[in-house]
Image 1 (cartoon, rainbow, N blue to C red):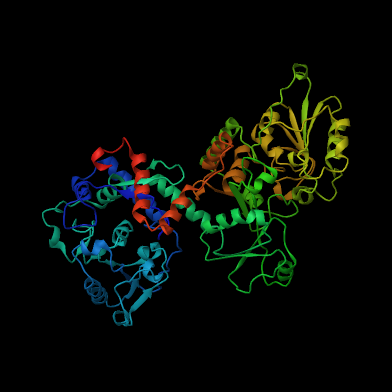
Image 2 (tube, rainbow, N blue to C red; image 1 turned 30 degrees about the vertical axis):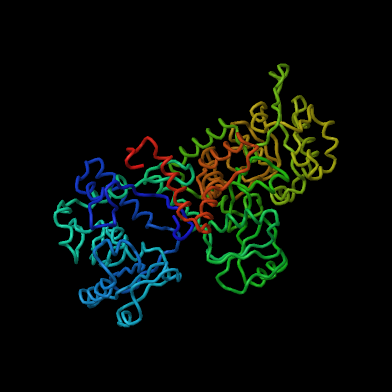
Length: 629
Protein backbone atom coordinates (compact mmCIF):
# COMPACT_ATOMS: atom_id res chain seq x y z
CA UNK A 1 0.00 0.00 0.00
CA UNK A 2 2.51 2.58 1.18
CA UNK A 3 6.12 2.95 0.18
CA UNK A 4 9.26 3.62 2.11
CA UNK A 5 11.39 2.31 4.91
CA UNK A 6 9.50 0.43 7.58
CA UNK A 7 6.48 -0.45 5.44
CA UNK A 8 6.22 -4.22 4.91
CA UNK A 9 5.14 -5.19 1.38
CA UNK A 10 1.78 -6.81 0.75
CA UNK A 11 3.17 -9.06 -1.97
CA UNK A 12 6.34 -10.95 -2.81
CA UNK A 13 7.61 -13.00 -5.75
CA UNK A 14 9.19 -16.42 -5.39
CA UNK A 15 11.60 -17.57 -8.09
CA UNK A 16 13.62 -20.81 -8.09
CA UNK A 17 15.53 -19.92 -11.27
CA UNK A 18 16.46 -16.25 -11.09
CA UNK A 19 14.55 -13.05 -10.44
CA UNK A 20 12.28 -11.02 -12.68
CA UNK A 21 14.49 -7.89 -12.91
CA UNK A 22 17.64 -9.85 -13.87
CA UNK A 23 17.60 -10.09 -17.66
CA UNK A 24 21.08 -11.66 -17.73
CA UNK A 25 19.61 -15.09 -16.92
CA UNK A 26 16.32 -16.91 -17.23
CA UNK A 27 13.69 -16.48 -14.52
CA UNK A 28 10.55 -18.34 -13.54
CA UNK A 29 8.54 -15.36 -14.77
CA UNK A 30 10.00 -15.69 -18.27
CA UNK A 31 8.86 -19.33 -18.42
CA UNK A 32 5.40 -18.40 -17.20
CA UNK A 33 5.04 -15.67 -19.82
CA UNK A 34 6.33 -17.97 -22.58
CA UNK A 35 3.87 -20.73 -21.63
CA UNK A 36 0.83 -18.56 -22.37
CA UNK A 37 -2.54 -18.69 -20.62
CA UNK A 38 -5.90 -20.44 -20.92
CA UNK A 39 -9.09 -18.66 -21.92
CA UNK A 40 -10.18 -18.57 -18.27
CA UNK A 41 -6.85 -17.08 -17.20
CA UNK A 42 -7.06 -14.52 -20.01
CA UNK A 43 -10.49 -13.40 -18.83
CA UNK A 44 -9.21 -13.08 -15.27
CA UNK A 45 -6.24 -11.02 -16.44
CA UNK A 46 -8.47 -8.71 -18.47
CA UNK A 47 -10.67 -8.21 -15.41
CA UNK A 48 -7.60 -7.47 -13.27
CA UNK A 49 -6.30 -4.92 -15.77
CA UNK A 50 -9.71 -3.28 -15.94
CA UNK A 51 -9.91 -3.17 -12.12
CA UNK A 52 -6.40 -1.70 -11.99
CA UNK A 53 -7.48 1.15 -14.23
CA UNK A 54 -10.88 1.62 -12.61
CA UNK A 55 -9.35 1.97 -9.15
CA UNK A 56 -6.30 3.88 -10.40
CA UNK A 57 -3.75 1.61 -8.76
CA UNK A 58 0.03 1.56 -8.78
CA UNK A 59 2.87 -0.31 -7.08
CA UNK A 60 2.45 1.96 -4.05
CA UNK A 61 -0.84 3.72 -3.40
CA UNK A 62 -0.56 6.19 -0.56
CA UNK A 63 -0.02 9.55 -2.19
CA UNK A 64 -2.31 11.90 -4.09
CA UNK A 65 -2.18 11.77 -7.88
CA UNK A 66 0.30 13.86 -9.82
CA UNK A 67 -1.73 16.15 -12.11
CA UNK A 68 -1.04 15.90 -15.85
CA UNK A 69 -0.34 19.02 -17.92
CA UNK A 70 -3.10 20.59 -20.00
CA UNK A 71 -1.14 20.17 -23.22
CA UNK A 72 -0.29 16.90 -25.05
CA UNK A 73 2.66 15.22 -23.36
CA UNK A 74 4.81 12.14 -23.11
CA UNK A 75 6.11 10.77 -19.83
CA UNK A 76 9.77 10.06 -19.06
CA UNK A 77 10.36 8.05 -15.88
CA UNK A 78 13.45 8.49 -13.73
CA UNK A 79 14.71 5.82 -11.30
CA UNK A 80 16.95 5.80 -8.25
CA UNK A 81 20.62 5.59 -9.17
CA UNK A 82 21.37 2.25 -7.53
CA UNK A 83 18.26 0.38 -8.74
CA UNK A 84 19.34 -3.21 -9.33
CA UNK A 85 16.95 -3.55 -12.26
CA UNK A 86 19.08 -1.03 -14.21
CA UNK A 87 22.34 -2.96 -13.83
CA UNK A 88 20.71 -6.35 -14.41
CA UNK A 89 18.60 -4.92 -17.23
CA UNK A 90 21.61 -4.26 -19.52
CA UNK A 91 21.50 -0.51 -18.80
CA UNK A 92 23.44 2.15 -16.95
CA UNK A 93 23.23 5.86 -16.14
CA UNK A 94 23.84 6.84 -19.79
CA UNK A 95 20.46 5.33 -20.76
CA UNK A 96 18.55 8.13 -19.03
CA UNK A 97 19.77 11.17 -21.01
CA UNK A 98 19.50 9.05 -24.15
CA UNK A 99 15.89 8.28 -23.26
CA UNK A 100 15.12 11.97 -22.71
CA UNK A 101 16.71 12.93 -26.03
CA UNK A 102 14.63 10.29 -27.80
CA UNK A 103 11.40 11.56 -26.24
CA UNK A 104 12.16 15.14 -27.32
CA UNK A 105 13.07 14.04 -30.84
CA UNK A 106 10.18 11.62 -31.40
CA UNK A 107 7.51 14.00 -30.07
CA UNK A 108 8.70 17.45 -31.22
CA UNK A 109 5.35 19.13 -30.46
CA UNK A 110 4.75 17.59 -27.03
CA UNK A 111 5.60 18.57 -23.51
CA UNK A 112 7.96 16.04 -21.96
CA UNK A 113 7.11 15.35 -18.32
CA UNK A 114 10.04 13.90 -16.36
CA UNK A 115 8.69 12.13 -13.26
CA UNK A 116 11.32 12.06 -10.54
CA UNK A 117 11.25 9.05 -8.21
CA UNK A 118 9.57 9.77 -4.83
CA UNK A 119 12.70 8.67 -2.92
CA UNK A 120 14.71 11.24 -4.86
CA UNK A 121 12.10 13.91 -4.15
CA UNK A 122 12.30 13.07 -0.44
CA UNK A 123 16.09 13.31 -0.47
CA UNK A 124 16.66 9.67 0.47
CA UNK A 125 18.20 8.62 -2.86
CA UNK A 126 19.79 10.09 -5.99
CA UNK A 127 18.34 10.08 -9.49
CA UNK A 128 19.80 10.36 -12.98
CA UNK A 129 18.85 13.83 -14.20
CA UNK A 130 20.73 16.93 -13.15
CA UNK A 131 19.91 20.50 -14.14
CA UNK A 132 21.80 20.45 -17.43
CA UNK A 133 19.50 17.73 -18.79
CA UNK A 134 16.35 19.58 -17.80
CA UNK A 135 16.93 23.02 -19.28
CA UNK A 136 15.01 22.26 -22.48
CA UNK A 137 11.94 24.54 -22.73
CA UNK A 138 9.60 21.59 -23.39
CA UNK A 139 10.74 19.63 -20.34
CA UNK A 140 8.56 19.83 -17.27
CA UNK A 141 9.59 18.24 -13.98
CA UNK A 142 7.16 16.28 -11.83
CA UNK A 143 8.65 16.47 -8.34
CA UNK A 144 5.57 16.05 -6.13
CA UNK A 145 6.27 12.37 -5.46
CA UNK A 146 2.66 11.69 -6.36
CA UNK A 147 0.65 8.74 -7.55
CA UNK A 148 1.24 8.19 -11.29
CA UNK A 149 -2.24 7.08 -12.43
CA UNK A 150 -3.33 10.40 -13.96
CA UNK A 151 -0.04 10.78 -15.82
CA UNK A 152 -0.15 7.23 -17.19
CA UNK A 153 -3.78 7.62 -18.18
CA UNK A 154 -3.18 10.82 -20.19
CA UNK A 155 0.32 10.37 -21.65
CA UNK A 156 0.62 9.79 -25.39
CA UNK A 157 3.65 7.59 -24.74
CA UNK A 158 5.74 6.45 -21.78
CA UNK A 159 9.54 6.23 -21.80
CA UNK A 160 11.33 4.06 -19.25
CA UNK A 161 14.66 2.35 -18.72
CA UNK A 162 13.57 -0.55 -16.49
CA UNK A 163 10.98 1.06 -14.19
CA UNK A 164 7.85 -0.91 -13.29
CA UNK A 165 5.89 2.12 -14.46
CA UNK A 166 6.41 0.76 -17.95
CA UNK A 167 4.39 -2.30 -16.97
CA UNK A 168 1.74 -0.07 -15.42
CA UNK A 169 1.65 1.98 -18.62
CA UNK A 170 0.84 -1.24 -20.52
CA UNK A 171 -2.02 -1.83 -18.11
CA UNK A 172 -3.24 1.65 -19.03
CA UNK A 173 -2.86 0.65 -22.70
CA UNK A 174 -0.21 3.31 -23.37
CA UNK A 175 2.66 2.90 -25.90
CA UNK A 176 5.87 2.09 -24.03
CA UNK A 177 9.48 2.65 -25.14
CA UNK A 178 12.21 0.93 -23.10
CA UNK A 179 15.95 1.73 -22.87
CA UNK A 180 16.85 -1.29 -20.76
CA UNK A 181 15.47 -4.82 -20.58
CA UNK A 182 12.77 -4.95 -17.88
CA UNK A 183 10.68 -8.10 -17.38
CA UNK A 184 7.89 -6.83 -19.65
CA UNK A 185 10.19 -5.92 -22.57
CA UNK A 186 11.25 -8.16 -25.45
CA UNK A 187 7.83 -9.76 -25.90
CA UNK A 188 6.57 -7.51 -28.68
CA UNK A 189 4.42 -5.40 -26.36
CA UNK A 190 6.92 -2.53 -26.13
CA UNK A 191 9.34 -0.72 -28.45
CA UNK A 192 12.76 -1.72 -27.12
CA UNK A 193 16.11 -0.01 -27.56
CA UNK A 194 17.85 -3.27 -26.54
CA UNK A 195 15.60 -5.70 -28.37
CA UNK A 196 18.43 -8.08 -29.29
CA UNK A 197 19.55 -8.74 -25.72
CA UNK A 198 17.08 -11.54 -24.97
CA UNK A 199 16.78 -13.16 -28.39
CA UNK A 200 16.34 -16.89 -27.91
CA UNK A 201 14.69 -16.53 -24.51
CA UNK A 202 11.84 -14.11 -25.17
CA UNK A 203 10.83 -15.27 -28.65
CA UNK A 204 7.21 -15.94 -27.67
CA UNK A 205 4.74 -13.21 -28.53
CA UNK A 206 2.21 -13.19 -25.70
CA UNK A 207 -0.66 -10.78 -25.61
CA UNK A 208 -1.08 -8.32 -22.72
CA UNK A 209 -3.47 -10.58 -20.71
CA UNK A 210 -0.83 -13.34 -20.75
CA UNK A 211 1.76 -10.91 -19.37
CA UNK A 212 -0.68 -9.59 -16.76
CA UNK A 213 -1.73 -13.03 -15.53
CA UNK A 214 1.86 -14.26 -15.36
CA UNK A 215 2.98 -11.22 -13.36
CA UNK A 216 0.03 -10.53 -11.07
CA UNK A 217 -1.34 -14.03 -10.53
CA UNK A 218 1.08 -16.88 -11.31
CA UNK A 219 4.37 -15.29 -10.22
CA UNK A 220 3.33 -13.25 -7.21
CA UNK A 221 2.08 -14.20 -3.75
CA UNK A 222 0.05 -11.86 -1.55
CA UNK A 223 -0.54 -11.66 2.18
CA UNK A 224 -3.67 -9.89 3.37
CA UNK A 225 -2.68 -7.43 6.13
CA UNK A 226 -5.96 -7.85 7.99
CA UNK A 227 -6.39 -11.64 7.95
CA UNK A 228 -2.64 -12.38 7.77
CA UNK A 229 -3.52 -15.10 5.25
CA UNK A 230 -2.55 -15.69 1.64
CA UNK A 231 -5.00 -13.89 -0.61
CA UNK A 232 -5.69 -13.28 -4.28
CA UNK A 233 -4.68 -10.09 -6.12
CA UNK A 234 -8.38 -9.26 -6.38
CA UNK A 235 -8.75 -9.38 -2.59
CA UNK A 236 -5.70 -7.21 -2.15
CA UNK A 237 -7.05 -4.70 -4.67
CA UNK A 238 -10.27 -4.49 -2.62
CA UNK A 239 -8.19 -3.82 0.49
CA UNK A 240 -6.11 -1.10 -1.19
CA UNK A 241 -9.21 0.54 -2.65
CA UNK A 242 -10.78 0.63 0.82
CA UNK A 243 -7.69 2.33 2.27
CA UNK A 244 -7.66 4.96 -0.48
CA UNK A 245 -11.41 5.59 -0.26
CA UNK A 246 -11.27 6.09 3.50
CA UNK A 247 -8.44 8.56 3.07
CA UNK A 248 -10.19 10.41 0.27
CA UNK A 249 -13.30 11.12 2.40
CA UNK A 250 -11.46 13.61 4.61
CA UNK A 251 -9.44 16.72 3.75
CA UNK A 252 -5.67 16.32 3.84
CA UNK A 253 -4.99 19.21 6.22
CA UNK A 254 -6.68 18.79 9.60
CA UNK A 255 -6.74 20.45 12.99
CA UNK A 256 -8.55 18.69 15.81
CA UNK A 257 -10.09 20.62 18.71
CA UNK A 258 -10.88 19.56 22.25
CA UNK A 259 -9.86 15.92 22.15
CA UNK A 260 -9.93 14.43 25.64
CA UNK A 261 -6.44 13.29 26.66
CA UNK A 262 -7.53 9.67 26.98
CA UNK A 263 -8.95 9.75 23.44
CA UNK A 264 -6.01 11.46 21.82
CA UNK A 265 -3.82 8.39 21.35
CA UNK A 266 -6.53 6.47 19.47
CA UNK A 267 -7.53 9.59 17.52
CA UNK A 268 -3.94 10.27 16.50
CA UNK A 269 -3.41 6.69 15.36
CA UNK A 270 -6.62 6.75 13.33
CA UNK A 271 -6.06 10.17 11.78
CA UNK A 272 -2.44 9.40 10.91
CA UNK A 273 -3.66 6.33 9.05
CA UNK A 274 -5.55 8.77 6.82
CA UNK A 275 -2.13 10.08 5.70
CA UNK A 276 -2.93 13.78 6.17
CA UNK A 277 -0.44 16.30 4.87
CA UNK A 278 -0.91 18.28 8.10
CA UNK A 279 -2.37 17.20 11.44
CA UNK A 280 -2.60 19.52 14.47
CA UNK A 281 -4.26 18.96 17.86
CA UNK A 282 -5.58 22.17 19.46
CA UNK A 283 -6.98 22.92 22.93
CA UNK A 284 -10.75 23.20 23.05
CA UNK A 285 -10.91 27.00 23.23
CA UNK A 286 -8.00 27.72 20.87
CA UNK A 287 -8.50 29.80 17.74
CA UNK A 288 -8.20 27.92 14.43
CA UNK A 289 -5.01 28.20 12.43
CA UNK A 290 -4.67 30.92 9.83
CA UNK A 291 -3.82 28.60 6.95
CA UNK A 292 -6.68 28.63 4.47
CA UNK A 293 -6.27 24.94 3.63
CA UNK A 294 -6.87 23.69 7.19
CA UNK A 295 -10.15 21.94 8.00
CA UNK A 296 -11.40 21.73 11.57
CA UNK A 297 -12.55 18.56 13.38
CA UNK A 298 -14.43 18.49 16.70
CA UNK A 299 -15.79 15.68 18.86
CA UNK A 300 -19.57 15.83 18.67
CA UNK A 301 -20.77 19.25 19.82
CA UNK A 302 -17.61 20.27 21.68
CA UNK A 303 -16.97 23.62 19.98
CA UNK A 304 -14.80 26.00 21.99
CA UNK A 305 -14.83 29.78 22.09
CA UNK A 306 -12.07 30.33 19.54
CA UNK A 307 -13.63 28.14 16.88
CA UNK A 308 -17.12 29.46 17.58
CA UNK A 309 -15.95 33.06 17.07
CA UNK A 310 -14.20 32.11 13.83
CA UNK A 311 -17.37 30.39 12.58
CA UNK A 312 -19.54 33.41 13.50
CA UNK A 313 -17.16 35.69 11.60
CA UNK A 314 -17.26 33.50 8.50
CA UNK A 315 -13.54 32.75 8.81
CA UNK A 316 -14.01 28.96 8.90
CA UNK A 317 -16.94 26.73 7.85
CA UNK A 318 -18.86 24.34 10.08
CA UNK A 319 -16.37 21.81 11.46
CA UNK A 320 -16.40 18.13 10.67
CA UNK A 321 -17.92 16.34 13.66
CA UNK A 322 -16.46 13.06 14.89
CA UNK A 323 -18.06 10.39 17.07
CA UNK A 324 -17.82 6.68 17.81
CA UNK A 325 -19.73 4.47 15.40
CA UNK A 326 -22.58 2.07 16.16
CA UNK A 327 -20.25 -0.90 16.57
CA UNK A 328 -17.65 0.31 19.00
CA UNK A 329 -15.75 -2.13 21.18
CA UNK A 330 -15.78 -4.92 23.72
CA UNK A 331 -16.38 -3.04 26.97
CA UNK A 332 -17.89 0.26 28.10
CA UNK A 333 -17.31 3.00 30.65
CA UNK A 334 -13.84 3.90 31.94
CA UNK A 335 -12.42 0.83 30.23
CA UNK A 336 -12.87 2.75 26.97
CA UNK A 337 -9.80 4.72 27.97
CA UNK A 338 -7.79 1.64 27.02
CA UNK A 339 -9.96 0.11 24.30
CA UNK A 340 -10.05 2.26 21.15
CA UNK A 341 -13.18 2.16 18.99
CA UNK A 342 -13.31 -0.06 15.94
CA UNK A 343 -15.50 2.49 14.15
CA UNK A 344 -15.74 6.27 13.79
CA UNK A 345 -18.15 8.54 12.00
CA UNK A 346 -17.16 11.83 10.37
CA UNK A 347 -20.03 14.13 9.50
CA UNK A 348 -19.71 17.39 7.55
CA UNK A 349 -23.34 18.52 7.99
CA UNK A 350 -24.17 17.66 11.59
CA UNK A 351 -24.01 14.46 13.60
CA UNK A 352 -26.35 11.48 13.63
CA UNK A 353 -27.81 12.07 17.13
CA UNK A 354 -28.71 15.72 16.48
CA UNK A 355 -32.25 15.66 15.09
CA UNK A 356 -32.47 19.47 15.07
CA UNK A 357 -30.70 19.55 11.69
CA UNK A 358 -29.68 17.23 8.93
CA UNK A 359 -26.62 14.98 9.01
CA UNK A 360 -24.66 13.09 6.39
CA UNK A 361 -26.37 9.89 7.52
CA UNK A 362 -29.85 11.38 7.35
CA UNK A 363 -29.23 12.82 3.86
CA UNK A 364 -27.94 9.47 2.65
CA UNK A 365 -30.91 7.57 4.02
CA UNK A 366 -33.35 10.13 2.63
CA UNK A 367 -31.97 10.24 -0.91
CA UNK A 368 -29.86 7.20 -1.76
CA UNK A 369 -31.16 4.76 -4.36
CA UNK A 370 -30.28 1.43 -2.83
CA UNK A 371 -29.17 -1.41 -5.09
CA UNK A 372 -30.03 -5.07 -4.75
CA UNK A 373 -26.38 -5.78 -3.93
CA UNK A 374 -26.37 -3.20 -1.12
CA UNK A 375 -29.50 -4.67 0.44
CA UNK A 376 -28.10 -8.18 0.19
CA UNK A 377 -24.82 -7.14 1.78
CA UNK A 378 -26.66 -5.38 4.63
CA UNK A 379 -28.92 -8.39 5.19
CA UNK A 380 -25.93 -10.73 5.44
CA UNK A 381 -24.18 -8.35 7.86
CA UNK A 382 -27.32 -8.02 10.01
CA UNK A 383 -27.85 -11.78 10.19
CA UNK A 384 -24.21 -12.30 11.14
CA UNK A 385 -24.39 -9.66 13.86
CA UNK A 386 -27.50 -11.23 15.37
CA UNK A 387 -26.05 -14.74 15.18
CA UNK A 388 -22.88 -13.63 16.96
CA UNK A 389 -24.88 -11.61 19.48
CA UNK A 390 -22.78 -8.47 18.88
CA UNK A 391 -23.91 -5.01 19.97
CA UNK A 392 -22.23 -1.61 20.26
CA UNK A 393 -20.31 -2.36 23.47
CA UNK A 394 -20.62 -6.16 23.90
CA UNK A 395 -20.76 -6.20 27.69
CA UNK A 396 -20.44 -9.40 29.67
CA UNK A 397 -23.33 -10.12 32.07
CA UNK A 398 -25.55 -13.02 33.19
CA UNK A 399 -28.47 -13.73 30.89
CA UNK A 400 -32.07 -13.06 31.91
CA UNK A 401 -34.55 -15.86 31.30
CA UNK A 402 -38.21 -15.06 30.77
CA UNK A 403 -40.24 -16.91 33.41
CA UNK A 404 -42.90 -19.34 32.20
CA UNK A 405 -45.54 -17.26 33.99
CA UNK A 406 -44.89 -14.44 31.53
CA UNK A 407 -45.37 -16.44 28.36
CA UNK A 408 -48.88 -15.00 27.85
CA UNK A 409 -48.23 -11.56 29.30
CA UNK A 410 -46.61 -8.80 27.23
CA UNK A 411 -43.08 -8.02 28.41
CA UNK A 412 -41.76 -4.54 27.63
CA UNK A 413 -38.23 -3.26 28.02
CA UNK A 414 -37.66 0.40 28.93
CA UNK A 415 -34.06 1.45 28.30
CA UNK A 416 -32.54 4.04 30.62
CA UNK A 417 -29.89 6.49 29.48
CA UNK A 418 -27.36 8.79 31.07
CA UNK A 419 -29.43 11.95 31.51
CA UNK A 420 -26.62 14.16 30.23
CA UNK A 421 -26.31 12.15 27.01
CA UNK A 422 -26.05 14.53 24.05
CA UNK A 423 -28.43 12.35 22.05
CA UNK A 424 -31.15 13.27 24.56
CA UNK A 425 -30.38 16.97 24.46
CA UNK A 426 -30.22 17.16 20.66
CA UNK A 427 -32.52 14.26 19.79
CA UNK A 428 -35.52 15.24 21.89
CA UNK A 429 -37.87 17.87 20.40
CA UNK A 430 -38.38 21.02 22.51
CA UNK A 431 -42.07 20.20 23.05
CA UNK A 432 -41.38 16.71 24.41
CA UNK A 433 -43.08 16.04 27.74
CA UNK A 434 -40.76 13.14 28.61
CA UNK A 435 -37.65 14.66 30.20
CA UNK A 436 -36.23 11.87 32.36
CA UNK A 437 -35.90 8.11 32.61
CA UNK A 438 -38.50 8.10 35.35
CA UNK A 439 -40.99 10.04 33.22
CA UNK A 440 -40.41 7.63 30.33
CA UNK A 441 -41.12 4.65 32.56
CA UNK A 442 -44.25 6.32 33.96
CA UNK A 443 -45.52 7.06 30.45
CA UNK A 444 -45.03 3.46 29.33
CA UNK A 445 -46.77 2.17 32.46
CA UNK A 446 -49.69 4.48 31.79
CA UNK A 447 -50.05 3.12 28.25
CA UNK A 448 -49.58 -0.54 29.21
CA UNK A 449 -50.95 -0.98 32.76
CA UNK A 450 -51.09 -4.78 32.49
CA UNK A 451 -47.71 -5.36 30.82
CA UNK A 452 -44.67 -6.71 32.62
CA UNK A 453 -42.22 -3.78 32.53
CA UNK A 454 -38.48 -4.25 32.78
CA UNK A 455 -36.41 -1.16 33.41
CA UNK A 456 -32.74 -1.45 32.50
CA UNK A 457 -30.65 1.46 33.81
CA UNK A 458 -27.60 2.55 31.86
CA UNK A 459 -24.49 0.47 32.73
CA UNK A 460 -22.44 3.57 33.60
CA UNK A 461 -25.12 4.64 36.06
CA UNK A 462 -25.18 1.17 37.59
CA UNK A 463 -21.39 1.22 37.97
CA UNK A 464 -21.48 4.65 39.60
CA UNK A 465 -19.46 6.29 36.84
CA UNK A 466 -22.32 8.58 35.79
CA UNK A 467 -25.05 10.22 37.82
CA UNK A 468 -28.55 8.74 37.85
CA UNK A 469 -31.36 10.86 36.48
CA UNK A 470 -33.82 12.84 38.51
CA UNK A 471 -35.98 10.42 40.50
CA UNK A 472 -34.30 7.38 38.97
CA UNK A 473 -34.11 5.80 42.40
CA UNK A 474 -37.91 5.49 42.30
CA UNK A 475 -38.09 3.49 39.07
CA UNK A 476 -38.77 0.27 40.98
CA UNK A 477 -42.16 1.73 41.96
CA UNK A 478 -43.29 1.95 38.32
CA UNK A 479 -42.05 -1.31 36.84
CA UNK A 480 -42.07 -5.01 37.63
CA UNK A 481 -38.31 -5.52 37.44
CA UNK A 482 -35.24 -3.30 37.57
CA UNK A 483 -32.57 -5.29 35.73
CA UNK A 484 -29.12 -3.70 36.17
CA UNK A 485 -27.13 -6.39 34.35
CA UNK A 486 -28.05 -8.47 31.34
CA UNK A 487 -26.59 -8.93 27.83
CA UNK A 488 -28.63 -6.47 25.80
CA UNK A 489 -28.90 -8.71 22.72
CA UNK A 490 -30.27 -11.62 24.78
CA UNK A 491 -32.59 -9.34 26.76
CA UNK A 492 -34.04 -7.75 23.63
CA UNK A 493 -34.78 -11.18 22.18
CA UNK A 494 -36.66 -12.12 25.36
CA UNK A 495 -39.10 -9.17 25.32
CA UNK A 496 -42.05 -8.22 23.14
CA UNK A 497 -41.39 -4.51 22.71
CA UNK A 498 -38.71 -1.92 23.48
CA UNK A 499 -39.32 1.70 24.56
CA UNK A 500 -36.56 4.31 24.32
CA UNK A 501 -36.04 8.02 24.09
CA UNK A 502 -32.93 8.09 21.88
CA UNK A 503 -31.00 5.06 23.16
CA UNK A 504 -29.05 2.85 20.78
CA UNK A 505 -30.92 -0.05 22.37
CA UNK A 506 -33.74 0.80 19.97
CA UNK A 507 -31.44 0.22 16.99
CA UNK A 508 -30.28 -3.10 18.48
CA UNK A 509 -33.93 -4.11 18.81
CA UNK A 510 -34.73 -3.19 15.22
CA UNK A 511 -31.85 -5.38 14.04
CA UNK A 512 -33.43 -8.30 15.91
CA UNK A 513 -36.94 -7.73 14.62
CA UNK A 514 -38.38 -6.53 17.96
CA UNK A 515 -40.96 -3.68 17.82
CA UNK A 516 -39.59 -0.32 18.99
CA UNK A 517 -41.44 2.74 20.29
CA UNK A 518 -39.42 5.96 20.32
CA UNK A 519 -40.14 8.90 22.62
CA UNK A 520 -37.48 11.10 21.02
CA UNK A 521 -36.00 11.31 17.54
CA UNK A 522 -32.99 8.95 17.30
CA UNK A 523 -31.32 8.42 13.93
CA UNK A 524 -33.28 5.22 13.27
CA UNK A 525 -36.72 6.81 13.87
CA UNK A 526 -38.93 8.35 11.19
CA UNK A 527 -38.19 5.78 8.48
CA UNK A 528 -41.28 3.61 8.97
CA UNK A 529 -39.47 0.99 11.05
CA UNK A 530 -40.50 2.25 14.51
CA UNK A 531 -43.58 3.63 16.27
CA UNK A 532 -42.65 7.25 16.89
CA UNK A 533 -43.97 9.84 19.26
CA UNK A 534 -42.69 12.64 16.99
CA UNK A 535 -42.46 13.27 13.27
CA UNK A 536 -39.39 14.57 11.44
CA UNK A 537 -40.49 16.08 8.12
CA UNK A 538 -37.00 15.59 6.68
CA UNK A 539 -37.44 11.84 7.06
CA UNK A 540 -40.58 11.34 5.02
CA UNK A 541 -39.29 8.21 3.33
CA UNK A 542 -40.00 4.62 4.30
CA UNK A 543 -36.96 2.35 4.36
CA UNK A 544 -36.56 -1.37 4.60
CA UNK A 545 -34.60 -2.69 7.56
CA UNK A 546 -31.63 -3.60 5.39
CA UNK A 547 -31.55 -0.15 3.80
CA UNK A 548 -31.27 1.37 7.27
CA UNK A 549 -28.57 -1.16 8.14
CA UNK A 550 -26.61 -0.36 5.02
CA UNK A 551 -26.65 3.36 5.78
CA UNK A 552 -25.88 3.07 9.50
CA UNK A 553 -23.38 0.20 9.53
CA UNK A 554 -21.76 0.17 6.08
CA UNK A 555 -21.93 3.62 4.47
CA UNK A 556 -21.69 6.03 7.42
CA UNK A 557 -18.91 4.68 9.68
CA UNK A 558 -15.29 3.99 8.89
CA UNK A 559 -13.81 0.96 10.57
CA UNK A 560 -10.22 0.73 11.78
CA UNK A 561 -8.39 -2.38 12.95
CA UNK A 562 -6.16 -2.06 15.97
CA UNK A 563 -4.64 -5.42 15.08
CA UNK A 564 -3.45 -4.50 11.61
CA UNK A 565 -3.45 -0.70 11.67
CA UNK A 566 -5.60 -0.72 8.51
CA UNK A 567 -9.06 0.43 7.57
CA UNK A 568 -11.38 -2.55 7.35
CA UNK A 569 -14.87 -3.37 6.13
CA UNK A 570 -17.89 -3.65 8.39
CA UNK A 571 -17.74 -7.42 7.98
CA UNK A 572 -14.09 -7.53 9.04
CA UNK A 573 -14.89 -5.29 12.03
CA UNK A 574 -17.58 -7.75 13.14
CA UNK A 575 -15.06 -10.58 13.02
CA UNK A 576 -12.51 -8.54 14.97
CA UNK A 577 -15.07 -7.69 17.67
CA UNK A 578 -16.11 -11.32 17.89
CA UNK A 579 -12.46 -12.31 18.31
CA UNK A 580 -11.93 -9.68 21.02
CA UNK A 581 -15.01 -10.90 22.87
CA UNK A 582 -13.74 -14.48 22.80
CA UNK A 583 -10.41 -13.31 24.24
CA UNK A 584 -11.45 -10.54 26.61
CA UNK A 585 -8.29 -10.95 28.69
CA UNK A 586 -6.10 -9.98 25.73
CA UNK A 587 -5.70 -6.37 24.68
CA UNK A 588 -5.63 -5.88 20.90
CA UNK A 589 -2.15 -5.47 19.50
CA UNK A 590 -0.95 -3.96 16.27
CA UNK A 591 1.36 -6.43 14.63
CA UNK A 592 1.78 -4.46 11.44
CA UNK A 593 2.78 -1.33 13.36
CA UNK A 594 5.26 -3.38 15.40
CA UNK A 595 6.66 -4.88 12.22
CA UNK A 596 6.93 -1.43 10.67
CA UNK A 597 8.85 -0.21 13.72
CA UNK A 598 11.25 -3.11 13.44
CA UNK A 599 11.90 -2.39 9.79
CA UNK A 600 12.35 1.33 10.40
CA UNK A 601 14.54 1.27 13.49
CA UNK A 602 16.38 -2.00 13.77
CA UNK A 603 19.96 -2.02 12.47
CA UNK A 604 19.54 -5.74 11.91
CA UNK A 605 17.52 -5.39 8.74
CA UNK A 606 18.34 -8.96 7.74
CA UNK A 607 16.61 -10.17 10.91
CA UNK A 608 13.51 -8.09 10.17
CA UNK A 609 13.53 -9.32 6.57
CA UNK A 610 13.80 -12.90 7.79
CA UNK A 611 10.78 -12.35 10.03
CA UNK A 612 8.75 -11.08 7.08
CA UNK A 613 9.88 -14.01 4.96
CA UNK A 614 8.85 -16.37 7.75
CA UNK A 615 5.36 -14.87 7.75
CA UNK A 616 5.02 -15.59 4.06
CA UNK A 617 6.53 -19.06 4.45
CA UNK A 618 4.08 -19.99 7.20
CA UNK A 619 1.21 -18.66 5.15
CA UNK A 620 2.37 -20.50 2.02
CA UNK A 621 3.13 -23.80 3.75
CA UNK A 622 1.53 -26.60 1.79
CA UNK A 623 0.71 -24.39 -1.19
CA UNK A 624 4.07 -24.19 -2.94
CA UNK A 625 6.73 -26.85 -3.52
CA UNK A 626 9.44 -27.07 -0.88
CA UNK A 627 11.99 -25.80 -3.40
CA UNK A 628 10.15 -22.46 -3.52
CA UNK A 629 9.64 -21.93 0.22
